[in-house]
Length: 130
Image (cartoon, rainbow, N blue to C red):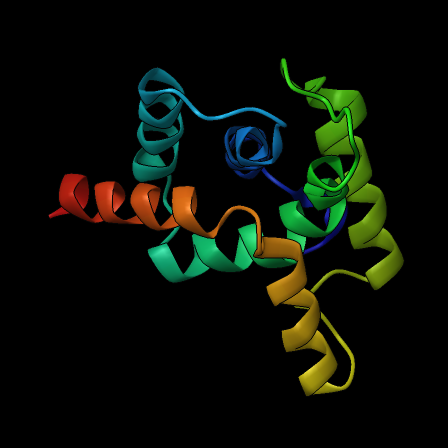
């Protein structure tokens, strides 16, 4: 898949996942919206986890590390879609590359602050898709 061919569906998944990286506690309504979009997507749960770990988290995890991060919502194009596309172009698109232990360590670092809500969202997606 070429970066220029990334679907609107994938961009919608990115944007839904971006809420995990806002500097605020997710409400039940927020989680419902994320679950609805991700469960309706054509991506398997494994693919969704890869998208989160290798595409969304590397771009947005820093928001959770600053004292006063973005808390309302990200600008879809400026703060989510364009930065992810730029990163993917720089990586020449594909899964995270590099020395495997370092790749795994980066994933842990990127996802450390969203593990609990992501686990809940994954479980709800599984329930819906059964």
